[in-house]
Amino acid sequence: MAEQRTQAEVIHNSMPEDDPNSNSDFSSAAKPRWGPQHAGAKELASHYSSGKRLQETICLLVCITLMAFNFMQLVMHFKSENWYTILVCSLFGILVADFFSGLVHWGADTWGSIEIPVIGKAFIRPFREHHIDPTSITRHDFIETNGDNFAVTVPFLAHMAYKFVSLSPEEINKTYNWECFVFLLAIFVSLTNQFHKWSHTYFGLPKWITFLQDMHIILPKKHHRIHHVAPHETYFCITTGWLNYPLEKIGFWTFLEDVIERTTGNKPRDDDFKWAQKQN
Image 1 (cartoon, rainbow, N blue to C red):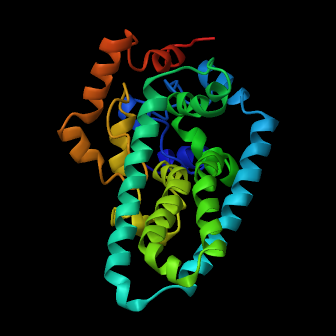
Image 2 (tube, helix red, strand yellow):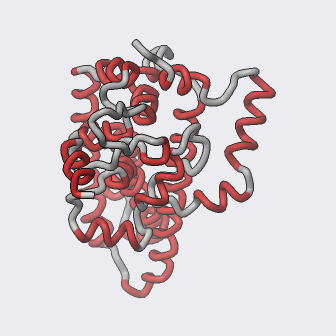
């Protein structure tokens, strides 16, 4: 056990690269099936460009500024007698964030390829890399981990900020509960990949993060492991993971895949399999 902990810590305090897929043998003779040495993982990682880095940095800075402004406005217009409605709207915002995290994750995992213009290398590439090198996310800094998610929320937060500066206090009070919903939705969408990263980080996390994971307020490690059993066809929600079980029980993702395959003839996860099988 001590030897395993030492080796795992070498890989940036992350889980053995893919425990459910027989990647936890740390003996000197063993060669991991997946990980940063995989040919596909190396090629995919090389496509992270300086232009992409600049876009992520700008979006993250703009988003954080808008979050801070909108939070101050929400505090200024807060009325304690509405706490129950505000709580319900906020929780609903978290649920919607979890659903959309699953929808985007499922879509990028299951369809398309990195050859698609613009979105391929920018947005689909990280999903392909993650399946053949699950620990790569733990080696990414805050910008690379979260830049895309923060970018998605910028238009909604900007619209919220515009309303706060253009509407009267009376008009703001009428839409206050909706703004709480949008704000919590934006916060949890923005931090989805950070929660995802923490679910792959098995050592060295602060106690408050492991507490949130244990309480299933954010994505727990063992819960997310289910998704990383090949062929990665279930448990796509990665914000809190609250919706994974009910969506799996009703066959939500399987139904969508069947409809798309019958309609288009495209097979789910075809591109994902291609990268996993890449040898050189």
